[in-house]
Length: 85
Image (cartoon, rainbow, N blue to C red; front, side, top):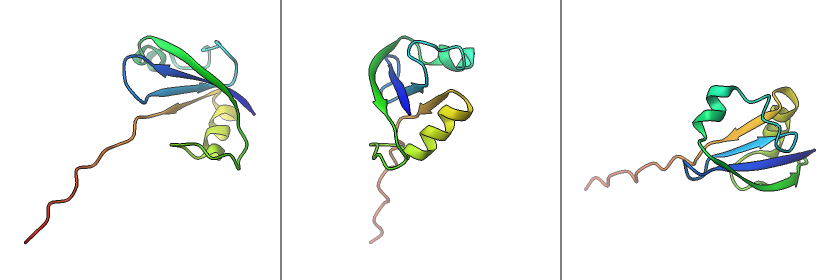
């Protein structure tokens, strides 16, 4: 499945995957507006076996088929646990 990836210029590591280039009609307006300005990153051929850096390709494909878009949120950085001595 071919998808098109855009990044938010407002928030680092926030990405929007869509199923048709430059067609944001399936993305809810409030969600789309929360990205601020966006920039096209790349198109990508997804298969369930494809390794992605942050997401499971099968999950992305399913979301694209059902909703027409997928949002990749920034990774959550948890502070290291305190050492008890």
